[in-house]
Length: 417
Image (cartoon, rainbow, N blue to C red; front, top):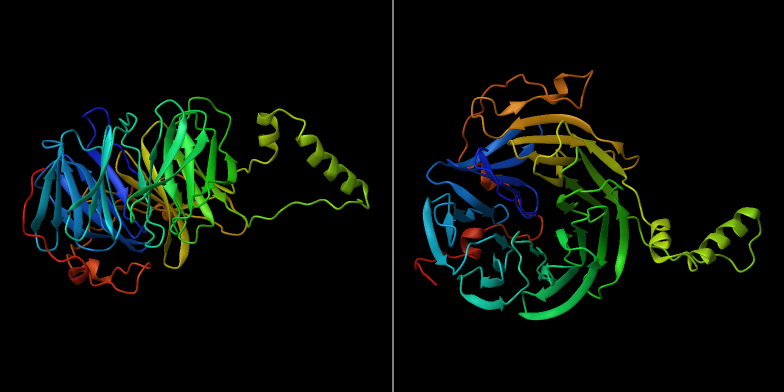
């Protein structure tokens, strides 16, 4: 999933927010520690774990396991891998520079510095490979696929244009370079299969989806024509049929990845519509590239209208109570849950909001205000009891095995590198 960057100023309470790899839980890092939440039911945002010891700069959870990777503000060069259920630190690593991002899947843990990436074996945390002298990447932009078969790492190949370097994190070798955009990259996301990569540039108007295996462009979506738009996050649905994009505007766009079909007009059109369609296809080859591309750009299938703009945020597509939902978390620590119509699309309906920071006011029921469903309701709900064992009920859909205690044996040594 996508990185929610720490806020530039120190006035905000939330320092980091991110969904886990399959969007079944949410991690929130604050100046007072961190919290882990699960999405078992729409009406209940279950607190899996609370830790109030350190100020958290980065927190990443490995699927629905008890393993978390932590970086604190006080020690920005040190990575800690902890077992939150046992309350133990498994190991720690120190690096030569500030840790900007940490990505995990079932086989690898990747640490991103400004000009290098470290690839660890997640089972014993040994450094398997180091990618050095990468273009300056101050935002720590990188993504790691969750697929066991297509275990790819993507990171910027240039700081001036939108080149994407694809690295095979399993076999530890460079795979390809994708020329995605003319402007520097702003956001990326792999689909669950690891075969599709969505990208957006700093310009923020066009979002592209590429075939990772051969580098071909599969889809191109136009988010809008408004200038100075910054894409904060991209996220695929579990079935790879939908792609969400959030930005510094008040709108979250959901695009549908329709089945690709070759458009081949008949040799002898039988109607004026046939002649017109053939003329459009033929004339596109004579148009300037930018104009021709716009003819084939898809528009958003569904939209979310948020009650704010300009705040950092992260979005995800998840299934809660067997219904597709859009999840958006703002930099103020508010989680918005919306219904999306998978057939018709259109405007998404707000059904629930949760305050992730106020322990006495964890849920704000947006469904109580039927006249204005897109406006959060400020009525507090009853405080929900703490359930430390709830994470055992979460099931990761990628593998049949869910015994993470055996999959990832404890590491007792602490290594400073």
